[in-house]
Image 1: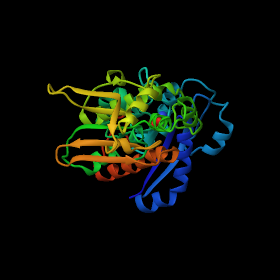
Image 2: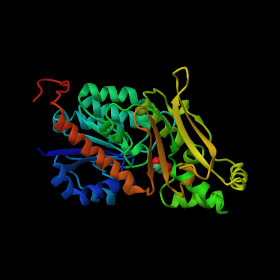
Image 3: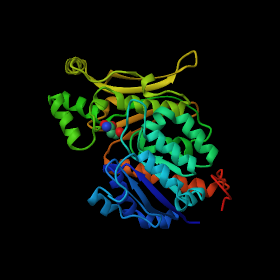
Length: 364
Ligand code: HSE
């Protein structure tokens, strides 16, 4: 059985553009090995919007960066109006419409990304997102909404790009319970810490991460530990069943004492890493934190150089499972969206069809 998806891209920055190219590059493999094809039917950014049920040309949109016919404005309203159009609503009801959400993280409350996800699920669309906000702030309610609608809400790209964490646990570890986690999940700060060990200044190292597009648009999100806190919240919510937000995560970032700390740790043969961790307290409460830790040289996390990341899951049946990411970049993040799309096609095939609630009239 083949599955042809119609994709609505909300956010069209570097990740979404790389995703469009990747879809093209992997078109033959997706069709041959998974029976999956994908057609982009809408793109919405702060700068412009374009939509057609027959498909839109992402490359020419990228060049023009704006669609004067649709004008600019609120992506929430654009999405709501789009999903109300019968041609798109029909595809959503058939389980073939997918929202691809790649807007940037708003650390205050995860909006408007959460609103985009809600609108899509309410209309019967699946959702894949590389934005940490929805799962960091509203995992439980969005997952429940997706379950009720018989749709998927997937966010593999939220932590360690396309390296499987959530799909690994959900698809390949039946009955295994994750009881805790710790790791290094922010590339920018790990790069800065590694470079500072070599004598490079904090500012120079950060500038390199900004130039490579790895740092967040607002780099204080990386430096102050917010990006790591958002990832810790996603991990705690999705793997431990927490209902937290990044604001519930105890948080420490890099500061003007970090250089002295790196030097002192080095004298003892140790390395300073920004470590996220999460687990249950003896009273059963789930807690997560982001903190600078001095690690002995033989610790797996201490061995991470530059942009490398790693996550160690504590499990009941398999003990510790370590997942190491040695290459990161746009392709890895874009790949997360592609692998989520394939995960949706698989679950579509495996499950009996679910009929989402009709919005009006008869369900075709
Ligand atoms: N700014 C993030 C990092 C990008 O440095 O890890 C990936 O989420």
